[in-house]
Length: 280
Image (tube, rainbow, N blue to C red; front, side, top):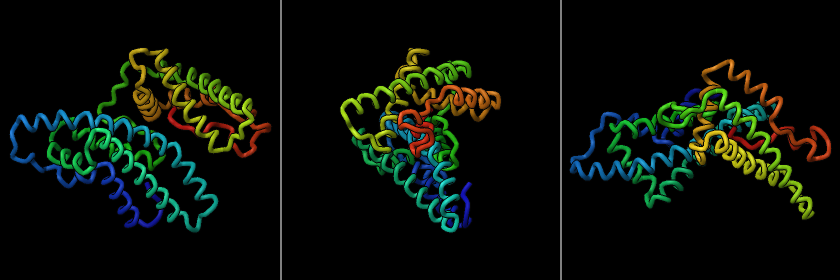
């Protein structure tokens, strides 16, 4: 998956696996829970599973964003700095690992735990089906993200009623809503005579894409309101499993995906013809 020196790449991969618990799982997969009471073990599982669910969702959004960015980063490195491409890609991977570690620390803190405490619970309950699925799923997400592949949500591959047709329908609607939201935000900024930097515009697009996807999903399938991760995972699954779906999405993107040249006065002026925001 990585270019360059094999041993160094292996070290980077080991560090990445550790960042999401995969290495811990691999080293301790035969380890049994400590000799504590059954009631206490049940209490620990009840405490651990909601944390892992939230970790999986947060890391999924991170990895979705990373996957969409990685290919562009690597292509730019290869085109502009081929002589030091390996070093620059390792630097990018380091930034990815740091981001994932920070996300884990932030999520566990919201539950009143440290990351180390959650890792210890994972070790003790390695044999629990959902704990093992979480660790395997998060490790797979990380590898996919660094390969530029959209990740799948940890756990089973259920799409919860999101057929290929329904995903395409939601995608088209989300593109329409995203364009309206971005144009409205830009119009509002210009009305206030505010200068919009590239960074500002990317932030506007990120929020617009998130809100548009949530709105389109809630409209098409009210039972999935607020569960954008399920839609994005279904999208990733169909992109992996169906060549016909890949062609459909390409046609939808070409016909409907928002393009922003007109907002900046002339085509191809460096702001990009498409939103850089990710997630759909």
